[in-house]
Structure formats: C-alpha cells, structure tokens
Image (cartoon, rainbow, N blue to C red):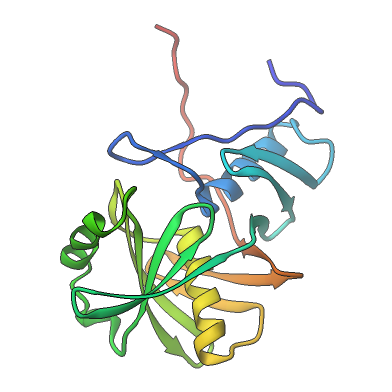
Length: 203
C-alpha cells in the first residue's frame, strides 16, 4: 500500500524483456499515474529511477519530466552514416536526414547494435519549420511511435547543428512534444493520458 510521501520508483523493461536505464515518456506516464492515485502530495514531486532522482510536474494539459544533463560523446561514422552520440541516461545515436520517409529504420537500427557494448537507440532527424521531426529504432523493441529520451537526444543534437532555441518542438509518428533545456538540464514536455485500464492478479 502506497501512501502520500512514500518514495515513488520507476523501473522499465523493453518488449524483449531487457532492462532500460531510462524512458522519458514512461517517466511522464508514471508521474501522471502516481499523481492521479494520490501518491504525490502536490503536482511537483520526484521519482526514483535507475539513473537517479528525476523531478516531474503534472499539469492539467501536460506532464513535464526532468531527464538530466546530456553527455555529448562526439560523432561516429557507422555504416556510411554520421551519427552524433549522446547519452541521456541511456545511449543514443542521432543522424540528420533530408527525408525521413526514405530511411530504412528497420535495417539500420539493428545493424548498429554490434557497434555499442550495450546496444543503442537510433534516431533519424529532419529539420522542420516548427522544429524537428524524428523516427526512432529502440534497442530491445524496434521502431516505435515515440521515444522520450530519443526526442531529447535529437533536440540536443539539433540545437547544436541548427542553432535552435529552446524549447524545441519534436514531431514523431505518435504525436508531438517539446524539449526544454533549463540550466543545462533537459526536460520533456507533452500530453499524457490513459489508453486502457486493467488489473494484475497475484499468482
């Protein structure tokens, strides 16, 4: 039984059963769920993750979550493409492309896994008038509709390459969110809601 004031902790597993260090959109969903369940005393609280405490804020129309400080690890040319390597608590390889529709995400994503000790999330990014658009291949999952830490990595890279000002709008197949850099710390901002309800029985 969780009561207000008890520590709130998030752990995350990929579709293949592997453990992920961080999930940005998952963190926002946990924040909404914890607030709606009455586990948090107010709309601003913190959640324990495998990479440390992360601040969250639950508002009427959106949920904001702190993703920490990005670590830029330079650029690597892999399989003929230049990738910017960024750590957001989990590893990312970001490439800029002209046309997202022509990228073979399902082939390139798996091909890059052997180039990183613990695998890597792979983002393909294009510039848009309103910000950036992104497709992502997530390790342990495949191509997904969205990736919060991937959006963060893409926005950090785009800020460096295109001199975009924060907050940066990021469009993904699953919708749209924004990434805000606050005193060197990355925040992800976007809507969150319920897609279904269920219960888990004890064995």
